[in-house]
Image 1: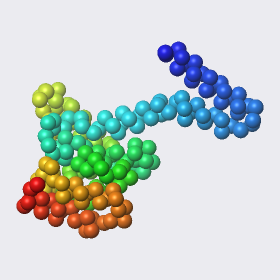
Image 2: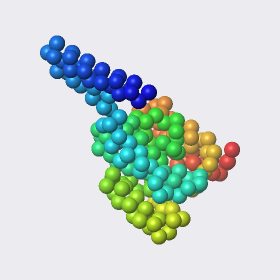
Image 3: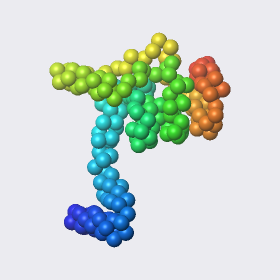
Image 4: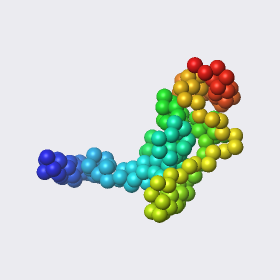
Length: 190
């Protein structure tokens, strides 16, 4: 199988070079970069972004704010990463499409941990991993803002309100009224 894949990629590279020479259109040289080398180019993105999502955080807790991490990314990296730097928000409201997670983040900011950039996130991870060398059972607990509401498991009203972000891209936080739905669900659990 490995030889078959290697030969296939070789054919793509050779064919692209031949097509570029024959047609005089050097754009053919981009084909191997898109088809054969994309996993190489995307590997750094996967490592630097994806590996930050849960490292060192609290395990086995129902509050996604404590076991997931979101971070700030430059717009092009965010686009290539399908906006999944909003990882906590994605876990909290999985039905919200990736392109609306930024808006959801703005609506929930008062309930979420501090939003760090890539460097700040990796510094936090380095501190956690260093501490875990001497304390193997250590798990970092994200400090939540004073305005944070307690997590409500199975809060159907809040899920529906957040789902409105998915259904109506023009909706704003006040129209969604996520806080009121959370408070209502707390008073009248399903």
